[in-house]
Image (cartoon, protein in one colour):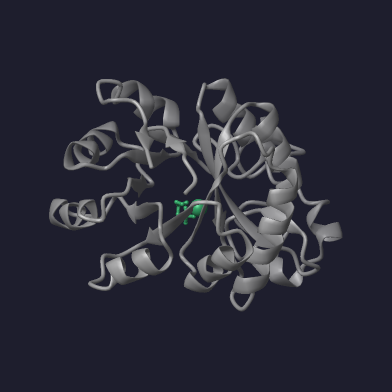
Length: 254
Ligand code: G3P
Ligand code: MG
């Protein structure tokens, strides 16, 4: 089993309180803040280029429009992905997975790669993402954490790269979560930290793997979750959360 150290704070979409989400600027900002791990969302363009982008539509985070799954990389590469966030980020691009991984590696960080498939592309997105990532990621570094809400994508991750650890993303508590966690041999349970209850955390703790909570920007909520047993927090402002929770033991091991 892969050994990985997951810090108490993971930068969400880079450090997206300070820079446009899922851009190279956001990754550099996280690194500048001394953040050790970032989370990014991976999906495919129409012509199957793996890019870092959260939404199915281009509208919110670029000056373009339409669906990612219906847009070729050539068009996507021309879009501005920074101006919506602030004038100083004008010219920022939607990164390819390759560009993002190279920044993450160069800056000495590790990454949670969330497979975020457009509907119907669950298998292909996982296959392409892992094909690129495994070729780029240095053999002598701890592996990335692979996660998804899509069970089909996680199944594909097991087929393609069983050695890389998997996180099971759980938005809402359901009685069958344990069945899926065991099926996917989940190394982490990545849960919605804003809606989870202490009782649910106690159930998750019984699985005896790290619990990662998304997306928490309120230090008081982060501290409460950690007092319940959550190991790590995804945050848009990871520096704020890190500085506030310093009294907790640093890092968890699986
Ligand atoms: O992986 C944690 C978190 O990123 C999951 O939700 O919608 O922000 O990708 P979302
Ligand atoms: Mg995500």
